[in-house]
Length: 600
Image 1 (tube, rainbow, N blue to C red):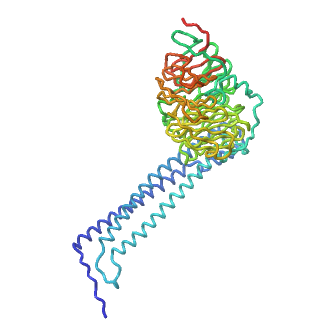
Image 2: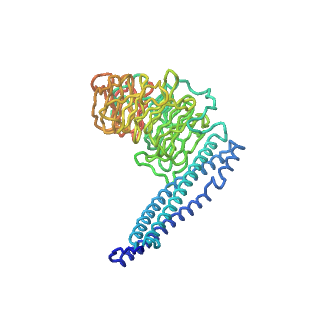
Image 3: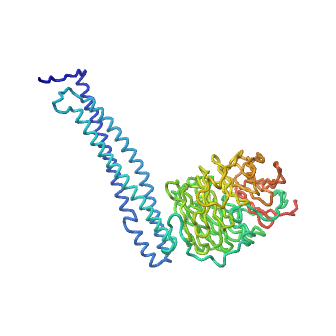
C-alpha cells in the first residue's frame, strides 16, 4: 500500500510567502538591533572599568598609603574622591543597564513575533515522509535564537549587577578607612560596629545639656523646655522683646543655644556658614564658612535651600551639616577644627535631617536613596575629632526626620524614623534595640516621647504609640495604632503625659489621648505651620508661618488659647526656649523674647 501525498488548500500562496519573507527581514533587523545594543553596553562598560578607581587599583594604592600615614588629609580626600567616582560609575551603570535591558527586551519581543509569523506564513504542503517544511525550520531557529539571547542577556545583567554591588562594597570599605584615618579596628559592617574610642572626659554633663538648647527641639531633640516663659509679645510695639538683629544668610534651621551664645546656619550656593550671636545683646560674634562653592551639578529643592538643618553643639564646638554633604565642627572662636564630606547624597529634596549630640558623640542620621539600594545609615562621630565611633546600616530610604534621644530604665536610646520603621539604637555601640513598623512615604516629622512611650506619625500612614522596653520586632507586642483626625506631613510631634500633639502644615491641630485611645480636641488655626511645637509644662508654643506664636494648654479637655506672640515676619524655624527666653528665627531677623519688657 502506497501513501498518497497530502495536499493543503493554500489560498494566495505567493502572498503568504511574501509576508513570510517580510517577517523574516523584520526578525533579522530585531536580532541585529539586540546584538548592537549588547555591543554598545559591553563597550561602554569596558570603558567605565578602565576609568574605575577599583579596577585601576587606585583605591587599593591609596588605602595602603593611608595605613602607613593615617593622618594624611590629602590621602583621605583622594580616597573620598575615588569613592565618589566609584559611586558615579555604579549609578550610571545601573541606569544604563536598565535602559539597555528594556531595549533588548523590546527587540526580543519583535524578534519572537516576527519569527512566529514567518513560521506560520512560510508553511507549505508536504508529505509526512518528506523533509521538514520551511515554517518548521524557522520555528526551530527562532527557539534556538531566543534561548541564546536569553542566556546572553541574563548572564550579562547578572555579572554586571554582581560587579557593581562588589564595587560599592569595596568603595564603602575604602571610604570607612579614610573616615577613621586608616584605623582597621573600626569597621562599618552591618548592622553595627563596636566602640573603640573613649568618652571625652571634658564632655558636658547631663545637667549642662538640660540647661541649654544643644540641638533641634532642645535636649534630646524632645521639644521640651524647662522653666517659665512669656505668653504674650509683640515685636512691633517691643512688648517683651529683648532684642532683634538682622540675619546675614537665609536658612530654615532653628537656633541652638549654649550659655551666652546663639548659633544659626545659613547659606547660598556661594557660601554656607555657621554664625554665632551674643545671647544677651544679639551682636554677631563671628560667621564661619563651611565647604567650597557648590558645583553646578547639585540639585536642591528651592523650598529646602542650602541650610535647612539645625546645627548642634556640645558646649565646646558647634556642628553643622548642609545638603552638599559637608559636615563641619567649628570651635567657639569661629574656626573649623574638623570636617567631613559625605559626597552627593541621594535625597530628592536635599538632606535636611538635623544633627543631635549624645554625650561626647555627634549622631548623624544619613538616610538616602531607596531602601533596596542600602545607602542609609546612622552613625556616631567623636565630637572632638570627627573620628567614627560606630556606624549602623538602616533598611530605609531617604527621610528628613531628626533622631531623638530618650531615657529608659535600661539606659538611653536613639529613636530614628524611616519608611516603614521606627527603630531604637544603643547610643554607645549603635546596636539596634527594637523596631516597629507602621510608617510610610516621605517621613519628615520627628518623634515625641513621654511617660515611657514613643510617638511617631506621618501623613497617609499611622499614628504609633510604642513602649520602649521591648527587643527585636515589637510591632505586635509593644506598639499600638491610634486614631487621629489629622496626621502631620512636616511638623514634628510633641507629647505631654499621655497626650500627643499633631500639627499639619495646613493649620489643623489635634490632641490625642493615647491612654484613652481617642481624640481630645481638634482646632483649625489660620496661617499654616512649618515650625514644630515646644512644650513648657502643660503649655504648647506653636509658631505659624506668619510669625504668630499660639500658646495653648495641653491639659484641658477643650482647646484653650492662653496667649499669642508676634514678630511680624515669616517664620519656618522652631523656637529655642532657654532660661525664660524664647529665641525665634524669622525670615530676615533673629528675635529674643523675654518677660517684663514693656511696650513703647
